[in-house]
Image: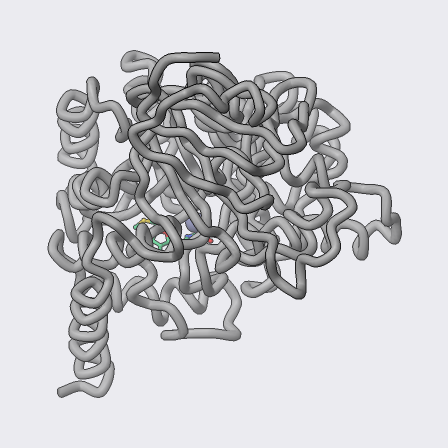
Length: 441
Ligand SMILES: CSC[C@H]1O[C@@H](n2cnc3c(O)ncnc32)[C@H](O)[C@@H]1O
Ligand SMILES: [Zn+2]
């Protein structure tokens, strides 16, 4: 191969995560502009000239990770309220703290989340929060790929007030970000327990008309299922099916409490699922039936959920947890093997967001969303199977480079386009305000 490219990532084991899970030992990836132009043995790239080169040092070159469900600005509430069940945690601690938020604080919290994600190898995230215009701006500032959506629920929002304004705000976001190369918008009703049927059907109509994803918390806890059964005589999944809301553009987050019929409905309607094992464990919500969903062919991606119920945004930790949790709950070490989990965190996550034509694998023509893992560490030596290391041994801090759309966002553990000291100082200042409010000062 001859000629010149913008970026060459070389001297690493390339985990393509394409349909055939091809692995190129001692491989390289060439990037022109924002896209991957070639993948193959490093020797074939020796005659290329590159404007910039990243030497993987014999480590692993892989697609950036896709976080299919988070609330990035909740970095501001990390460790604020632990060891509580979902409803107590939300109603008594998180919702009161969120009443203090404004766009500036959400932008600051999201930037902190973006910094953490870049440093731990996430290149794309799906967000649901308040003041999502500020989240979109923060994602763009950070250079991350993102699908973001304003939370919609029945009670007045600290951002838009009544729900009619929430629909208008969502439509404005869709128009504003329609042609952005990195940020796109989803319609995001919170959950069946905080959204009346009218809200859900209107939201689904907006998503359908604009051909954008819809994201919702679904069947997260037993108390949600009991609540919806009491109100509508149906499970939350049946309730959404009844309303005509299930579809291929729906990303259902959590899906912990599902019966056989619920799983069949999700499969039949092509609904995608975001699995959040650490959040489900921490809030004691339960264990989602992921092996059963995968057996049905349901697309399942991985998510961290927000930092207050995890308490980090590290998808490497999430992969480790997902792989082990289901083995323990099923007493079967063969379920969710390393490659399956790795696909959930990359290409299946991208598919869950409708972005599998763009990101999630290293293939010619895809956007260059790539990370490098430095394996020259005691806990990563020796290495027999890279997929095993990535799921069971690598941590977010082993990521040595993060590239999104061909732009190098982090190299040698240094953020190249964000002022990390300022971002952390801003977050500490906001935390002081939250603390003063809690103390009634
Ligand atoms: C305002 S955006 C989203 C809304 O949801 C809250 N939240 C965070 N994690 C969860 C979860 O696991 N289930 C339900 N709701 C959750 C978050 O604090 C925001 O208020
Ligand atoms: Zn959530």
